[in-house]
Image (tube, rainbow, N blue to C red):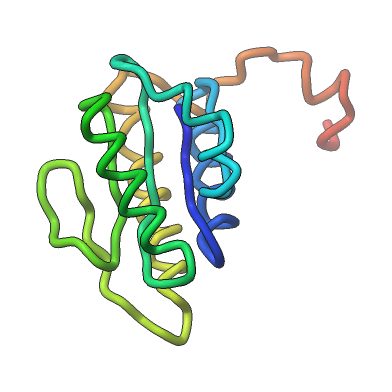
Length: 141
């Protein structure tokens, strides 16, 4: 899976990637939109998954072009947008200029990561490696 954002929403895409990785325990990559256009776009194939964060800003036209292209290559796409109306593959977020809506977009990732593991029969609290925390020293035992 790839998650693509631009401007203030590139860090939003990074946060969404971390949440999906933590809860779904699947490989996820995140990219700034311009970076994605220079190679990682080759990962858009029929069975790939792509989440695109579309908002107003300097990358708006390129993101529209990416969305148009992605729609022609895979049905497995989700658009989180302040510009498009909601439909089966688009979640509409209201435009809030003071925050560029990034906070509300992060909430969408939180909601996705609450429901998808349960729908897929996963308990994301179950560690994959029980000895990771103690071996790596990431938490006090």
